Image 1 (cartoon, one colour):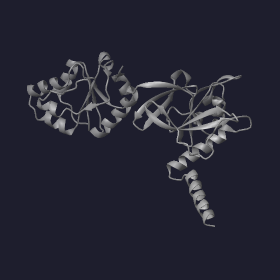
Image 2: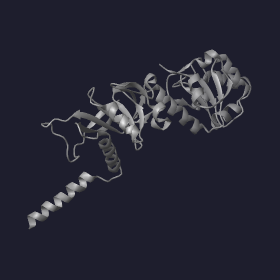
Image 3: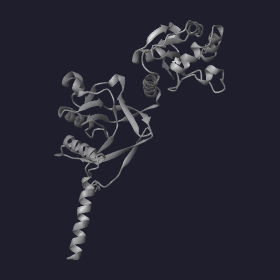
Image 4: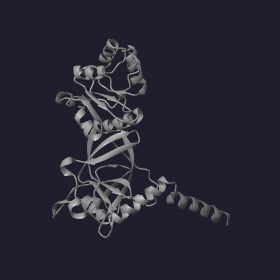
Length: 309
């Protein structure tokens, strides 16, 4: 499944030189963008017509120096019926032959004042997100102190209630119950709410509430990177919980390893505040301040000192 050219135009601003209803319905199936350098010399052995064709100063200058019918034939080879769009950067003047080819191939022709590298970056970032394989996980995604936190646990453990308390503490809800995730790169996984559930939260005994309506626009966020996972579980006296913070537990989300903290839940524990502390501790660790390591180092020194005595 691809992204329609019309969706690209809604996201990124271009001057439209030529378009049609059918051209706007063409689908972009890859985030790769081609600058047709070798192709314009006639070398088409590894040409990929399904990519957006981006013309910068080099490609434009070469086409500008090809005279008359040769220029039309050259562009006709580069732009095929499969080509979703042609983009000319830097507000470079568009040759008549390029407009004729765009009409013949029924391919959207666009112009931008931006540089080729900037256009390439904008298009690639947008298409990478849109074309990424998505999956769904059960839980609540929150933005806490700028850290994306996925709260998980068994049904009825209190995930939504904890999230509501975190919203009251000034943090932002991204998604409740269902979190759509995708891999942005090898180190980054992103989470978004399902369109139908955006800004909504289910509370047992109350029903469905709209967090943005009740708490304002500052209480919600459209999407977030998932930096930390928190798993809530029922406190049992015979369960072994990490009391020093030395466990290095990770979970796999869309092929990305995300650190996980397990928090026992029982009456009297303020889970929202505990999660806040866990997030602050996680952020401190990423900055090189590890309280557990400092404690263990101090303990080792104390033990060594007592042995000497």
